[in-house]
Length: 327
Ligand code: NDP
Image (spheres, rainbow, N blue to C red):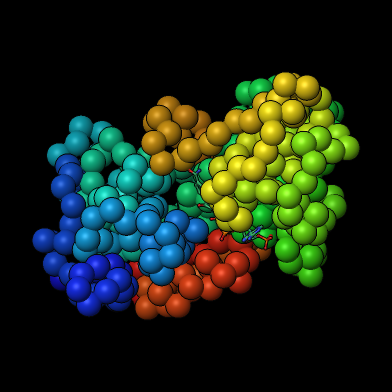
């Protein structure tokens, strides 16, 4: 038997609970992992609270990421004792996830844990941090360099935003952090933000084009915010879009793209091919100051997950939440 969060949906309704599970709750796969840490991502918050249609099979163990040690393997690349981590691939959505003490999955989905990080540190980064790095890699791929000008990070106090601020600042970019919690300015400055701005200026319907300011952007917010960010991005600037914290809509015009050559780069972490994942984790090891991780992270036990999921969706949690699944 092992402990895990279980989401059920039946005639009694949609509900999440901390449950005692047995191997029947595990998914198919050639590798079984003893989980050490998982995390709470925005998507996990939506799944646990039922506020978004994330879970597509019931009952479901949520948790889109985890780090742990291989217990059993029929996969050629993994042996018992190997330290591994996982992000995405539909885990916690259609395949039982990481918010439990054990997980069984396809070895092809796993990434060897980078030696630079402990299991806890790799989950302090988690899917949010790995997605932030995919955004940074896209900015680089489209040629954005620090001398081009300011980079805007929206949702800066969130998981994606916090890691994006820390990585971009370490790479020498001038980072402007947009947030609804300007009282957290000291935190964002300690991560490396040069300036903090109120997200309200992006939240409402705006004009097709505004004054050019951003050389690049990491947007985890979507909706009017993304439209206004594109409208204020400089000629040939690059906007990476990875999230929908404000909304899934994009009430924009084509003006920034056809008149200013702005690039809108979509970022998906879930089905991202393995070679790109390996690069992202290598770059996190090189370009994220691990001392900053302590500032970004706080830890909870499995029993605190359901309460924390509600607060995360309300935007009341700062940075990253690591879950010790064994306490
Ligand atoms: P968090 O909940 O940690 O952060 C989201 C942040 O967005 C909040 O902290 C808040 O920042 C801001 N925010 C919340 N509500 C609003 C609103 N109504 N208007 C404007 N800003 C708002 O989530 P994550 O950082 O983990 O994820 C952020 C987004 O990225 C989510 O939508 C998530 O689904 C998506 N995501 C996508 C991935 C992909 O593969 N594409 C992978 C990982 C995440 P502040 O208080 O600073 O304003």
